[in-house]
Amino acid sequence: MAKFDCPSCKLIVEKSMFNNPKSRHEYHVRDHHFNVAVDIFVPGCTKLPSDLQDVCPDNDVYWHIKQLPVLELVQLDFIQKFLRRGDFYALSSGTRIDTDNVVALLPNGELILSVTKDTYEELGLEGKPSKYDQRRKPTRYIVEVPLLNKSYQKGKSGYERVQWCLKDRLNLTFDILVAWKPAEGHHIELDTYWSNYTCNKIVVNKQTVLQTTSALSVPSINSCYLASKTVKGQIQADNAQSVRERCQDRTNGASSDSDGGKEWCEAEEMFEWLGAISCGVSCTGKPDAFISTFSCPEPSLQVSGAVCHRWTGFITPGRIKEMLSRLRHYLTSTNSADWAAITVHGFADSPLSWHKHEHGYSTCGGENLYTFVVFPEDGGKYWYIMATGGNDDIS
Image (cartoon, rainbow, N blue to C red):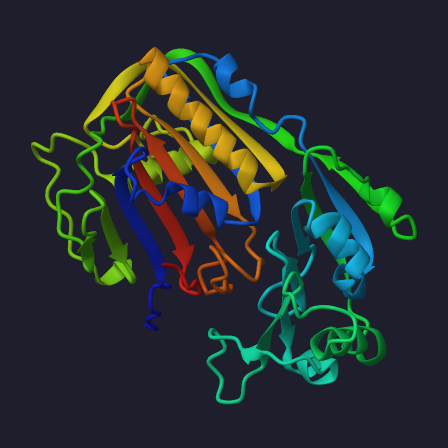
């Protein structure tokens, strides 16, 4: 019988406090640029609290622009009106990171092109081989163009080279998704600016995954307790009051202890249960269930109702930051739940995951997501759980 290696994946668990000067929560949110979905789970209530509803992306919009030349993104007029006057995010749509050409634009002005070998040679811009291309002769390259660099000006060699390559050598065009938050007092509609192209405005979609008034079993967790076992590669961060547990290949990790007498659920168990809830899986554990016999991990506790909503589209880190802040405020001011969670999903075919770290599509997929489990204790304790496939350069 043939044996296949289990696909590599990465899981990082971190616990800290929001008011800790060394806390990395703002970094984690701000530098995960391309978010396709966000889930909020709040136990112990039958509808989303009004405080949270006010900052959720129900009415947020993003744009789908058809066949936009990359040349449009490197023009000085565009840079002045959009990149210097707000947070501009752009990502090619309908392109696969492992086989197609992909483009992304960050609010800091970094234009990222992840291209095939043939495109790279024809384009003529300097780049570097993809770190996830394992072939002896690279077949994929990453090109970065710093559009907000002081040297990117008319008459400068770098500017003229970019213009020539994208205009005369290879006119790359893409269907592009755009999310833009303009600076206060400045607003230009994209369909007005790019009137020669088809620009469709799309409203972020909201879905109610779970809304029940019935009793529900949820994992019993403690903010100070992550796991009962030693995880391979555990790191204690100096002066940060945080623990980062890295499972670079979870199939080689230590086996878990027996559940007998366990006082709290572990972070990994809770993360798996949250994933089942967000997928609409019934976690009753009934043996006659046709689809799944998955049940809430033990120990658990009963809550009188719960709500889980999901928003999908193109959601900016700024919106995620507002949602996380309001969720913290709700828990600490009402003390109506032992914990709540917010999960953010990245685009599977984005060329980046966090910061400027390269993202690829591995054998187990292109997942790049993170969860904040927020507790109501003074100081704002939280868990941060990050999960990716094997082709992600994360830190």
